[in-house]
Image (cartoon, one colour):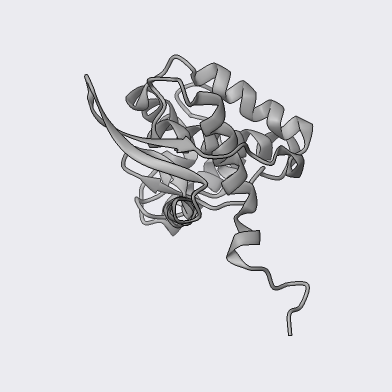
Length: 189
């Protein structure tokens, strides 16, 4: 018997899937749009929403990868979308090397998002529109949450509130939070 707390993986990741489709539709003709840029748009959108509203857009967990943060479930969700014919994945050669691309086969269902959530995504897309994969990766490396966790570890949403000590005055509270996260992840900050 199914309870209210049960949900299928499809339902659990519906917002991630629809946001992937939304972004892919918006940037389909962008020659700089690939999987890396998609992951960073998802990341920045979710963490900005958390900072503004106390809740992310997708509800997904993000983890640290060498080239920046990504949703932990990105690959299985993407693979499922390919199997269902919702997207096509392919690789193109660019001047900077191969680029993994995603092309949508249907429009996104944006009715599952609040207007202010889509506004954040649109703003992030606009701000990153001229950037390539290496530039958006570099930007994500300035985020303290990515900097203080070990590779492969989840990046807590609340780290969006930790300031870069080289750019601002860090309070004792910020320092303690950063030290706690660094200790939990076996890093030194």
